[in-house]
Amino acid sequence: MIKAIAVDIDGTLTDMNRVLCPESLLAIKRLFVPVILSTGNTHCFSRTVSVILGTPRIFIAENGGVLSYSEDELEILADQQVCEDAFLRLSEEFILKKYDSSRHKYRFTDVILERNFDLGALVRRADELGLPVDIVDTAFAVHIKDRRVNKGTGLTRIAQHLNLDPMDFAAIGDSMSDRPMFEVAGFRASVGNGRPGLKEISDYVAKKDFGAGFAEIVDYMIEEEMLSDSL
Ligand SMILES: O=C(O)COP(=O)(O)O
Ligand SMILES: [Mg+2]
Image (cartoon, rainbow, N blue to C red; front, side, top):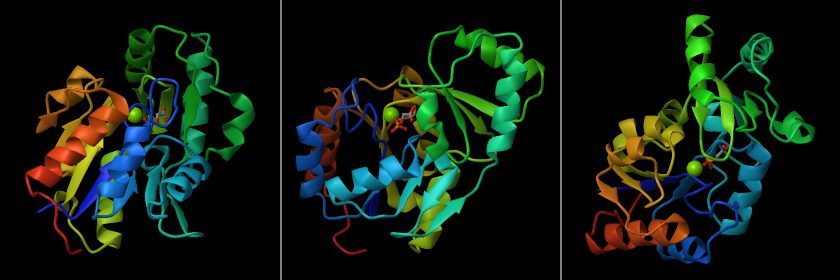
């Protein structure tokens, strides 16, 4: 039985403009298991989203670099300096622009870039140089992140905190940054707009995109009686 849900924000609960889909809110209201947000966004953004959606203050931010356990308890699990060093090294060869650099001060563990360069070439070069980072494209931004964390390590730690097993979770998402949490969860579902590399390891692929796809997945799990009614 599924005892909790880990859900991505951008491209899963929102549309491509990062606007919340009304279907997402209605679907969250239909759910009777905890909904844990799992996102590449900052902890401040994620916290605000959790307030307006009415989900727990337990969530995964910065792709597992930052975890929140309560209103005021954060855990920082990655080293932003390794990402800054990688950014500087790669900037010697590529014209890279930090995404929304004025708001970068709210990020604790990664560096995010605008998607205005040859991503494949950047990833290859980072590998050649042996930089200790992952470069992940979420379709919204490109993240340079500490290799030691991802949404899967985040989900494993959050599950421990809740006295659950990661297999007790359903994971729902759209991009390759969701793949590590799909690899540890007990049930995985992609929205229709999800990346092929995520869909291929999904147990259920929604026909619909964005929030309508998320709602379709929630309805499927309820109809199939996959959700536990006691935590
Ligand atoms: O931070 C991003 O680039 C995308 O965020 P997401 O993980 O909620 O899709
Ligand atoms: Mg996403």
